[in-house]
Length: 240
Image (cartoon, rainbow, N blue to C red; front, side):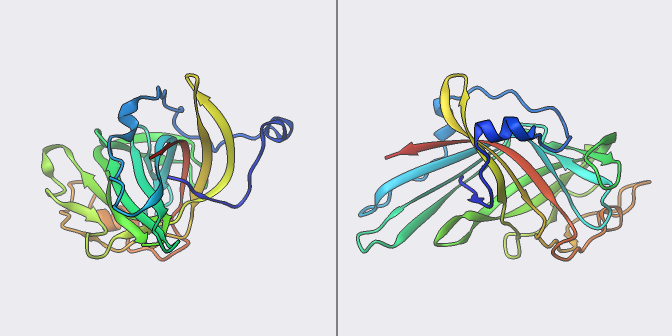
C-alpha cells in the first residue's frame, strides 16, 4: 500500500541528516517472494492500469488509549494489500486485499513518551484484523479492528477494539520514503505514522485477573489525537 507523502527524504539527504527511525523492536528480516502478492485483488472487467501494492511491516507499533506506557509491537510479519486502477471513464477504482498476519503481536510496557521497552506483558497479545478501505477512491486509508488475546482465553474469545460495523480508521502519513533493494528486489522503504485515530471502548472482553479490564488497562475509549502509531514498511508494486 502506498502512503501519502508529507515529506520525501532522498538517499543523500537522509545520510546528511542522519535520519533514524524511532527506537522500537529490531527491524524484522524480510526476503521478497512471489507470495507477497498472494492477496492481490483480481483486476475488475473494464479497468485499466491495475496496480497491486503490498506493504510488509518491518517494525513499528501502536499505543491504544490514554495509558501511553502500553504498546503493541509490530514484531511479527504482517502484510497489507490493496489495489487501484482506472475505469473507462477515467475514475479511480480501488479494491481491498486484506491484512495477513500469521502470528500475534507482543504487548509491552514502555517508558512513557518513548518507544523504549521496559517489559513484556505475557498475559496479552494483539492482532490487527483488516475490515476494508475507508474510502472507495483511495487506498491510503483503511479500517481495522484490534483483537486482543490471552492464554487460556481469559479475555474472551472475541475481545476487540473496534468492530466490523464500527472499525478503527487508520490514515498513515509518510514522513520519509526511499528507493530500496530488498535482497536485490526493488521496492520502497517508507517511514510513516498516524496520531489521529480514535478508539472506542473494547467489545466482548472479560476482566483479566490482576490486570483488570482492557478498557481500564489501556485507557479506553480514547479520542482522536491520544493514541499513536509508527511504521516502517517495505512496499512493493505489481502491475497487471
